[in-house]
Image 1: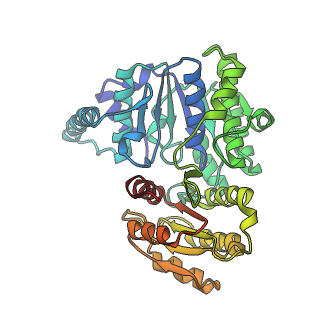
Image 2: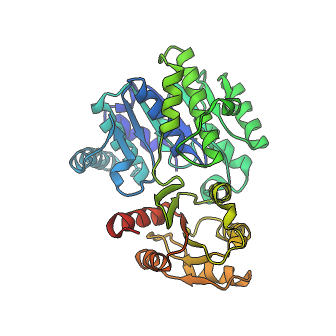
Length: 401
C-alpha cells in the first residue's frame, strides 16, 4: 500500500487527474449508496458525472461510469494498454510495479479525462490515506460515510485506527462531510478537520429532510443525508446551483443495485451487499422492519450466505444466528467465487454448534441458488460477499425465480 508508485504512474501518463472537480468518498459502509445519491442529484440538475466505484456486481465495467454509461470493453482495453506501457517504462527505470488497484484507478482517470464530465465522484478502494484515489490533491469536497471494523490486516483492528486511515483523505481547506455515528470516530474526524483547517459538516441533522426512499433501510436515510449535506455545501461554495425540489426528487428515486434489492416478489428474492459486521447489521435491521410478522413461523425464510476469509466471520455468523433465530430460517452456506472465499463447512459447523439444524453447505453458488429456488419459501435473502450476490443476480436473470 502507498501512493508513491501511483504518483509516478500518473506523472508518466501526463497527470490526467489534474483537471478534475472531484468529490472524494471514503468510509466502511455506505460509500456506493452515497455516490449513487450524489450522482443522481447532480444529473437531475443537468450536470455530467463520472463515477469510480468498487467492487462491481455483474461486470467489471460497472466500476467506471461516465455520462450515464459504463466503459466499453474496447475502451477498457485501450486505456489498460496505455497504463501497461507506462508501467513497463517505469520498471525499466528500476521503479516498483504499482498495485492492481493503482492500475484500475489510472484507467479510470484516463477514461474520465476523455469524457470531460463536470464532476468526478471517486470512491476509495481501501482506507483513504494510502489509497490510490488519494492522489487527488485538491477535491472540492471530501466525505466519510459510516465507520466500522473491516480490512483489519491493512487498516488495524480498532475504530480509532480505521478512522485515522479514512480521515487521510481530508485536505487543507476542503469541506469534510460525514454521517459517522460512532463517537470516537467523529472526534478523530473533527480533530483532523481542525488540523487541516477544513470545514467540518455534520450530515446527521439533514436526516429529518429526507423523503421516503426507493432504497430501503434506515441506514439509507443517513446515506441520503450525507449526499444532501454535500450538495448544499457545493451550492454555497459556488460549484453548482441547485433546486431543492429537484434534489428531493433525485434522492427519492435513486436506486443502487445490490442494496437490499428485491429481485422477485411472491416468493421474494432479495440480495444485499452487507459483507461485514456493520453491513450485516443494516441488512438485519431492514429485514426486521418489513418482515417481523414472519417471526415464529415455520421455515418461511431461506438465507443464502457466503463470506470472505479476511472478514470477522465468527462474529458475523453469531450475529446472523441470534438475529434470525426467531424466523426459523433454512441456511444455505456457499463459497464466494474468489480465492479469498470462506469454506462453507466452517460456517456450517459454527451454526450447528449454536443449535441450528437446518443448515446446508453447498460450495457452488449456482447449486445453492437452485436449492433455494426449489424450496420456494416466502422469502429468500442472500447477503455476504458482493461476489456471491452478483452471482445470485446473474442466475436470477438467467433462470428466473
